[in-house]
Length: 143
Image 1: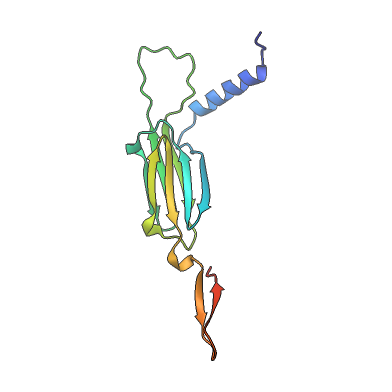
Image 2: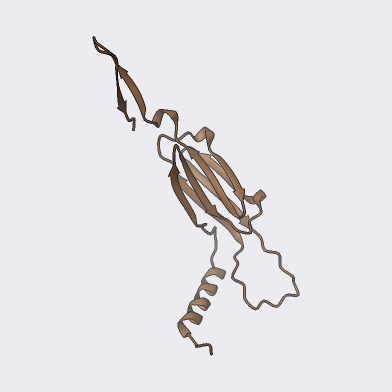
């Protein structure tokens, strides 16, 4: 037997009203992690046409835009409609030490993956120190 939960119904009603009146771009959930000498950004964009996805860099600002349009039958009588349509936007400020020229992106199974490599200048490197006897190497990290 199903139990009646007035809070669940109120939450569903409130979210429907608030979402339907919402203007402007929606955000997309994302993960960002470092693996080796790359940062990897994964953004969920299910049901998005890959042709509508746009990734731009302007200075230090990385912008991801996407558009979802839902096809509707004019004769349809909706029972529930939880999938949103419209514009999606995410902006990230990129820090120093990234190779912005080599950023790449792929879109597969509704997930946009953006690979952001660390620049060669920002990677740790060894500096050779010579002495009168033998050369030694000391590890240095550039920040």
